[in-house]
Length: 153
Figure: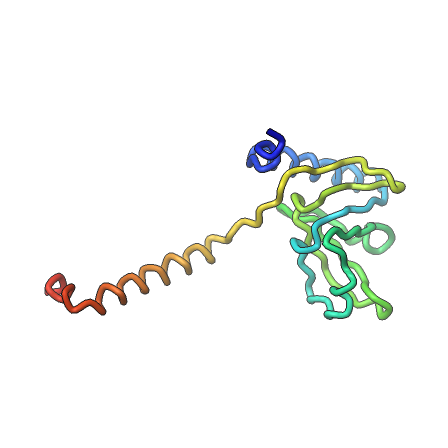
């Protein structure tokens, strides 16, 4: 029963809205917070060096304070912020999908827990490329059969 709920698209929409509204509320109140998230869904720009990435756990906590908090914003379906990583403070812009946020934390206490399972949506461009390649492959297979030449008069 719980599994059905956490995989439900409508439940995910409710959770995403709750996460977004809570984060916006914390921004308005100028309250630092942490987000525990699935690191596999997080994107870094520029990408982090392998020696830094290898230190992340599957669930990673990002604490938004100081410069990181000042640069943080919510755009579309992402929490975006700038942060420095490693001993050299390697700078990167971090994109966290809202639904990959598992907890929002203040003073080591979770104030939001997200049970919805994040599903990365395929872009329309990716789907179009698959469709175009599928049509091309299908046509090549069709043309490779000599029996089909009668259909091409």
